[in-house]
Length: 401
Image (tube, rainbow, N blue to C red; front, side, top):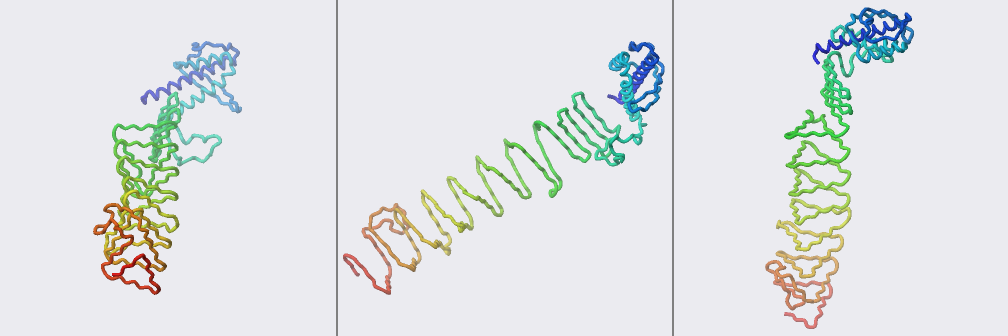
């Protein structure tokens, strides 16, 4: 609607209200003179002139109003119907006059605001409110800088151009709204579903100050994230993930976890690791079961421990027993000296049963099959047996040299 049409609309409305008031007061005057109040709308007797009448309001106050019209304005359908009803029921006249005057006051205010002659300082405070003027409202709105467009369904579009109070608001009848306020804040509220569809790129950038700005995302239900291409996630600071339920990660290809410092995995109960092959490459490895428990390893193939450094040692220390059992043969190959010290007693039993060894199971340079001797000791040098007690050797036959 153009500015010219907007102004003319209120001026035509004012002329219509004046004509309605004139005819209501003329009807009231005829009734007071004892004439027949039943009238015909648009009677020539009501076409022009002026009417003066003293009005008495519900609170007892009175006022004299004089309204004139040149008779060029016509009444709308509602005003014509009300005038016809009042001619048959004079008790309706006062109420219709008061409604008409209130509407006329509103139109006069609109016209004065449009012409820039309205006195905002002369507005009376609201009844029951405070007499202290609000000189710094949170949202500043001043006519004619606030523009509102509303529909019969309840949709509304508002643009406030008042200085220091600029905002845009889009509201639908269901309560959903978009608000862009004077503080540069954006509010989008949806009481049902919200869809964002982009055929190309979508960029969301949040914050300028890394120490103070935040992004909060609160999901009441489930979250489904589907990425058809690659997904890259990078965090400059720390990252904390907390899952109160179960956590499952499934990778169709290769999964890699790399840490430039420490990596800790802690489970209060059981921890399981299952794979077709397991390689552990590290500089230092320590298993600490000092709090209690045990280690059990089941190996279906070979089990090999190899010390690569010649100056290193392989140690097994037990405060209890050490047990070693082989269903086949046992091989020991020592390039240096073989030293054993027994604080207690030493007892060895050889039953002489025949047992086949795994072919090639021995170390290179060793015999890997026993001969017919039940117990054979081959020494390339001297044998020195020193006993502080008796040396007892029993046999069917004993050969020396």
